[in-house]
Amino acid sequence: MTEQQQAQKITQVPVSLGARGYQIMIGEGLLADPMPYLADILPRPKLALVSDDVVAARYGPALMAALADGGVDVDLHVIPAGEGSKCFAELERLCAALLDFGIERSDLVMALGGGVVGDLTGFAASVLRRGVGVVQLPTTLLSQVDSSVGGKTGINMAQGKNLVGAFHQPRRVLIDLATLDSLPERERKAGYAEVVKYGLIDRPDFFTWLERNEAAVLKGDKQAQAYAVAESCRAKAAIVVADERESGARALLNLGHSFGHAIEAFAGYDGRVLHGEAVAIGCQMALDLSVVLDLCSQADADRLRQHLAETGLPHRCTDLCTGLSADRMMDLMAQDKKVSAGVLTFVLSRGIGRAFLSRDVPPDVLRGFLTANLI
Image 1 (cartoon, rainbow, N blue to C red):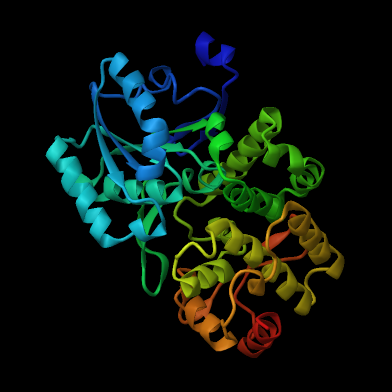
Image 2 (spheres, rainbow, N blue to C red):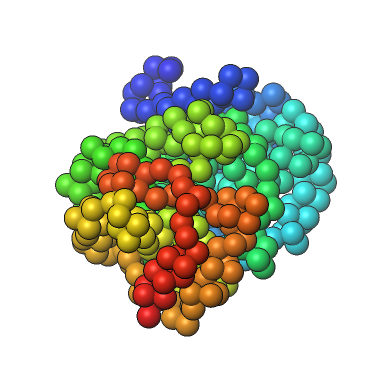
């Protein structure tokens, strides 16, 4: 770490994947002065910047000016904001723009924005010239603690979320906590659901810390935010290092997502349900199903329910969408990427911080559980 990085209180979290390893850098002011964090991985003074129309308007000019001051030639490509941009049409448009700009295999593409920008840009980088480098600059809490780390990239299909994609690790992740100040309250809360998820998986002490500090995290206390983001990144990095391509333990990161992705697909990615809101509902459903299966205590499921309610996050499907039947939910869940030989791998729980994988949920029990929870 350089003297400048120490002065700016930059926290570094390594993702130790050998030749594919990289650093996650967390602090304030990284977008205002990015060159100290890019110089060692920039092969030549040329890169492409990808953002959406909302984020580009807010952060694009200053970031591009700072890069230009560092002698870097930058081209900006802007996509429409929203989940609808994770599609083949935008992927083709982005790849064409990168080729027109002359991006070579050794160059970098930077993703400035939330999960949509990061997922689309990362996927384009993975296939362009059979793989160019990507740097993630996540600007939402959700993308800072989840989608920017671990190398999962992809786009959506009508059948479900992230069904087309690739594993492509970033060269670096730069997390500027100052970007959280501009987030709408609803988006901050949605991102917080992914933070809670890490406590539920295998960090019960972190969950307890969140119960005591969620107000500080959500209201902008930078010390609390720095700890929550760094601890979330450490939790994800540890699982990614153990199982980079999700052949086993990495599937634990999908706690709440089998239910959540089905809810998002039913809502049509139209903004009625944000990804983090769906994850919050899905996590609660995972613990509630675990109670039904006599795996988890009712007290732990209620503890999560109380925390989500105190945070202002939904914890029932009917909080945000209606009309979703048990049969439709099961059809949507059957498209989940964790389905193997027609059987869905569930992330269940034996209690706070004790998540595990199971392929033993009887369909009739699942159907009954969904019927009871979708009315």
